[in-house]
Image (tube, rainbow, N blue to C red; front, side, top):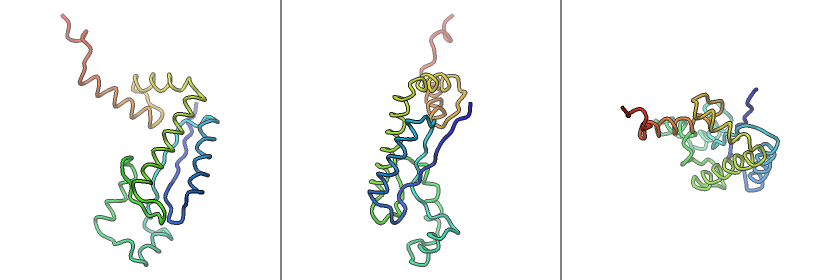
Length: 154
């Protein structure tokens, strides 16, 4: 079958707690209805966008190596650059993890067969979601550091 996923962006400049709660309820509904995967990313003002031009005009963005390197930070789950007027980097990272843990927890509770599917696909190296891919790499690394005894018998 087809896997469906959703990408969610947090931390837009004017976004507040009420907006975050609406996003949380969306994540709950998506998990409960059967979406396979959710990706949560911090907002980044991409070059060419209206907010990018606004930040450039207000001198909140300086076009230097630091800014362009920060564009790659969206994938680092442990840290975030905040462009929000209300949420700092640590709060934004917490919100991101909170949404992802809640999504996967509810998704596995409401669709328990997915736990088996996750483990089987990750174990076989036949991944269909990012979470399976991450778990597959963990399994692969564990096998490297803790090889099965049967390989060395004889």
